Structure formats: C-alpha cells, structure tokens
Length: 269
Image (cartoon, rainbow, N blue to C red):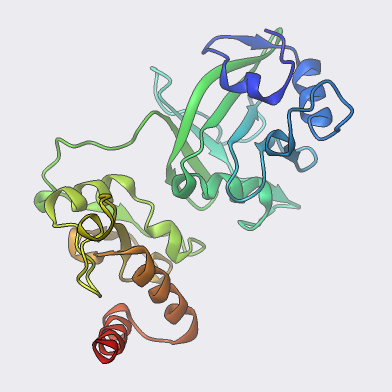
C-alpha cells in the first residue's frame, strides 16, 4: 500500500505492507508544508532519532502512535501469545537509562488516558507489515504490553476480584487511574455521584460522566498491591482537578484533601 499522507494510516488494514522508504518519507515530510505528504499541523508526525516510535499530532493529545519493531532488537520484545493479541514492547533507553518523560516513551504511557490508537508495524521482507491497532494494557519497569482492542472484561465480579498493580516505582499517580478494567467495573457498581461535592453530573448537565481517582498513588507501593474498588473515588471533573492541585501542594492523603474541599464547599453554600 502507498501512503500519500498521514490520514492514510487510519485507513490501512491488518496485513497491509508498506515499504520502509514510503513510511520514512511520510514521517519526514509530513511536517513540511510544501510537501505532498503535508495534511495539516494536526497530522504532522513527530519523532525522536532511531527509536522506532512516532506520533501523529501534538503531544500529549496525539491522534495516534506509530510503533515499528524488528525481531531481536530488544530481548523483551515480541508476541505474548500465539494468537498475536498482545505484544510486549520495550521502553526506549539512552545509554542504558530509561526516561519515562522522553517523548517516545511518554506517548505510549499516556495512551490509556487519551485513548488514541497505537499502530503496530513489524519488519518483514518487503518493509513493514501492519499488525493492527493496539492499546496499552500493562506497564512494567522496562516494557509495556500492547493489546488489540479493549482490555475490559464485564463478566468479572468486582467484589471478588483483585487487580495486581505496583512494583512500578516510576509510575505516576495518573497512571494508576488508567486501570480501565477496574474503573469500568467500579462505575457499573456505583452511582455516578461525586464523592466530594455530591453532585450528579448527568442531572446537572444532561450528560452521564464521572472520573475515577486512585486514593493512594501507586508509586508509593514497593511490591504488588491488590487494588479493589475501595482504593478509588468517583469524582466530577472540577473536584478531581482540585484534588490533583492539592496533592501537589500538600503532603497529605486523599481523605484529608476531600475533607478540606468539602469544608470549602459548605462555606460557599
């Protein structure tokens, strides 16, 4: 298949093959306004040298991530199952040191928050073979796992389920909130009412919406921690943002911050 501009990436099908030159030219010239590959600033493809990761659009809210893999490049890389539903992909390192703030790694770490697709290409005889659209399902210290489609199982009874998180000291508080299977089931079993202001977003604005907040930052765990529904609080966007601001400002836990906010809201009434 011939790629003429970045939007073509969203139209290719699993099994399609692209020459290395074609993909290279698209990445390089999508940023050049006078080029035939130009499709607008929002489709400009960013990259860092020799890392195999590219992103369409502006960080952090990109349109998609492009991952190119070669057999044997990294020891941890490869398919996790025979059906090729999950691919283990190593974080990129500079002189052996992994920086999770590096754009090439950050666009993958941010995927569960912004939910843009990860387009996986594997090296083949003719160039690059498109394996399909993936999402990040697990994040470990040296690698992450890319999985086809959604990683949510609605058949599991949340009350009897435990979700192993932890042993990832580098993971930020925000990453902990991205365990979509946990959050999905939590929302199914609770009223969508903010834990702080007690407002129901749907009744206020006519749209059903709520956000999940992890009460204890996962980065504080030094070993695997069984995460249950009681570890999360459901919050409206305003209160959630306020919680994050106070987390940066004060060295205290969620319950104390929630109490402070509830007191402030009571004074305003």
